[in-house]
Length: 111
Image (cartoon, rainbow, N blue to C red; front, top):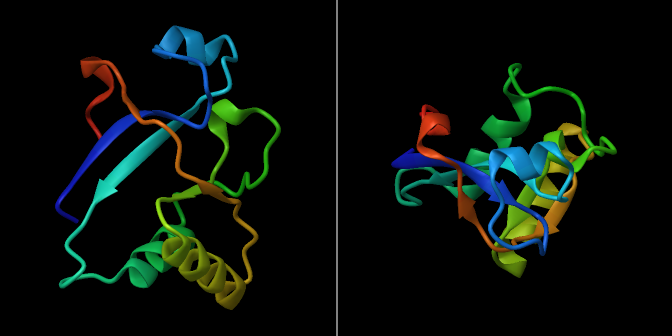
């Protein structure tokens, strides 16, 4: 992994904040991962995420604030993520990437 940032995605609501997400504006609290594909391929990145025991088993949860999902930025990523999910027997939603908003500085402790 090259880097990571915490933010909000998944809704058309403009300028989300932690408070607006908690009130249910439709965004999901998310982690954006930057990686070097020559060191770790996308499929392996997804596999490690899916198989990480710290990732809660709340796939498809109704509250979008806490859903576990993969936001694909291309059709190739979508197909790869779906294939890895099928291989490991997990049905994690693979969604279209939407606008990304960095979370407030106090939330940027994820790495």
